[in-house]
Image (cartoon, rainbow, N blue to C red):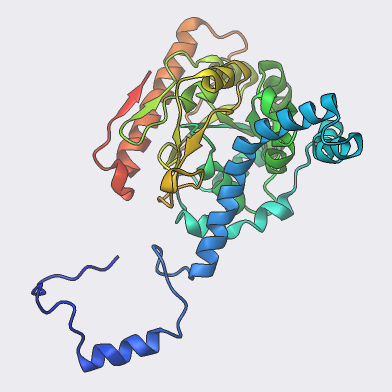
Length: 348
């Protein structure tokens, strides 16, 4: 950003001849927005892509209710009711597919959010560990309404990155939503599913896990940063049992690009189903994500040992270390985002 200073208010709006000529020349240049290296067309394409995800989460429940009602009452006609419900029927009958090629086409969204990565342990270092059979749980927080930081990370990831993300069963089975989010290579976040996946060696046995889950969504706030973590110890126990390491990371901006309704029937339904079905908003009080900077800060592996039968003391020890590391990442990198500079991290 550039700022003018030392200009008298009475003459600040009077252009000099040189300024007038420069202004004429700039008319032919593409308009640049918050990130001065991004042309306005790419910026708005990124905004449109991000808004599509919001539209799916808000529109899908309404569409499903409408389609079901149309089928039940054959409205407006029997033929039209089938046409209206066709996407719902098709989505119900098909499985979600990992589409990395499609994810790569969403690169303008990375520019829209001015996405940035801070890795204390490089991908190359982790790959070297993986070659020796070591697997990792990439534990990340906070969840946010929609993890746009996670989406940007998937877009920016190497083409050969096959690490899946663990998601709530409801996301994997809700029509429309499962097909849209399924392009990011999702697996079930149940304990049995995660343990089964971690039994694979190397990269094939790694996964991304949102520790706080949907419960953390309702702690999202632009004013304070809260994690649902104190009681989330199951992932540490699984990691110790399976002999995999945990890599902590923090997704700055996930809780600020959208604001969520935390009370009401839809919020209660979201908590029960473990999927975001409540209303949320961003720019202009519409479901358009705010173009605020996103930063993924990833630390080093914690160094968990393999303990086939961990005690509560073992779990608490490594859980406490994870909490300490998440707090350290937050305090170290929050200066990169204006909204976070004066924030304190609370662990609930």
